[in-house]
Structures are given as structure tokens and as C-alpha cells.
Length: 142
Image (cartoon, rainbow, N blue to C red):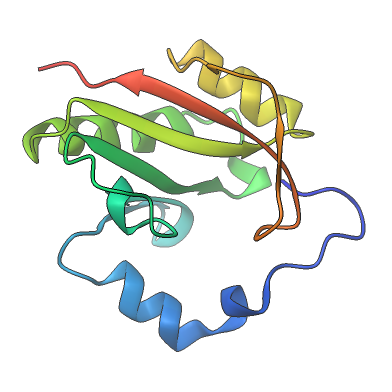
């Protein structure tokens, strides 16, 4: 689990139709990893300007989701999905990406750091998400 014990997701995350509309939007990139026909992970990004009113920065993509089933941790699915996202961001003209990781999720944070992401600052409260998060960034190779 990526969140602290007792965490309850914001109500809008339970709105499946709203999530379906968002993830299938024209500005959103999404991919899944499958093993023997079973979805074992997914990844998505969107323009940072569309993430919670993120302001106008056309060169910045926001990595919205990267999840892999625990049964497939260490399988290579996560780096594969992340690499595909970075490549797709380059193809769409982005030069930078960012993401927010749960501050207490040490495993995920180590993964992003191994993959070349850096945290420009300390954990910060994220009231909309209900936990502290750490912002990570990376450049997108051309």
C-alpha cells in the first residue's frame, strides 16, 4: 500500500466514471503492463497544467499514476512502464516531468531515485490528498 495506515482516499478518487473520463482524455497518456493477459500495472501522465489547476507550464508533464501489483514488484514492470512514459513525454514535446510520492513510501521513493528522479525539497502536507508528499522531477531526454 502506498498510503499510511488509516488513510482514506479523497471522495473524488472513488468516482469511477470521472476517473474513466480523465484517463481517456485527449491530453492523457496511459499504458498498462500485462502478463499472460492479466493487467499487472499501469502508468499515466498528463500536462502539469491539468493537475489540480497546476498553472501554465507547457514543457512540464505530471506523472499521475504508476502502480504495479505487489505480486509483480521486482519483475521489471515498473521500470518498463516508467521508461515508456518518459519516452512518450519526449514524443509529445515535454522537456521535464514531475510526480508526487507519498512521503512515507520509502520503497517507491528509492525506486524513483534509482530511475533518475530528484526531490527538490522536503516532504510537504498535501491537504487535498490527505498525506505528506514529496515532489520529484526529472528532465526528459530528447
